Length: 246
Image (cartoon, rainbow, N blue to C red; front, side, top):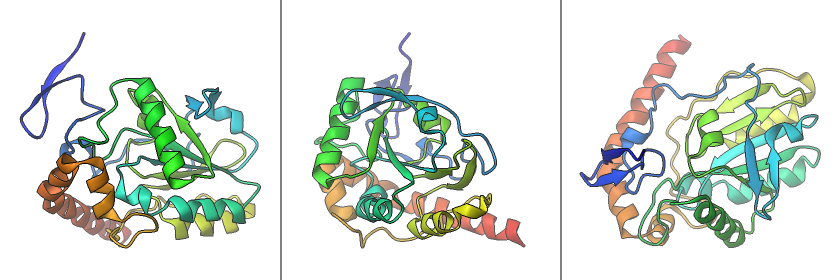
């Protein structure tokens, strides 16, 4: 049965908890991210390639895998696309996957996904626009696989050939990913990488302004409206992580 709810703008929506129409900080809990921690077995999931082939994450067992999440409306994904493609060329024996998720900042031009077909077509648009060289996978419209890995807009998990999560980044830090891959022969389990509020305005492809304007005026307004709350959430999380390290 469809669930009626009210989103951050006061609009009544139907079953929009995952594919929200308006971005709002209530959709992300920056205090406790779900999903596997370093040392856990990587959850299996089913997804579809851009060519329409159904695969399971366990199909990649036996290789090192870098699993990143992202979408065309996520400025942080924008800042990492070409950097991650270059990293794939550096580590040719590693499987690099981008799991396409819900739209981080949906707008009039790039709406929230209403169906799996919509989501798959959006992922194809993303891959074509960015000339993505990595494997792009698309899960169901409810984001089942995305939820298993924490539900964040641009997280990263590095999984060893035995299917164990060796490193998890709440946000994708390419430098950390590079370090882990350079030392993968050690098969070391790394501490969870906490995002430290790094700016995303100087990006590799479009930049945050163009990403949002391409998505639509609603995406721009939602971002401006909630930017202070997001910044505060990041600062609080960074403070808590530093306190726990003492």
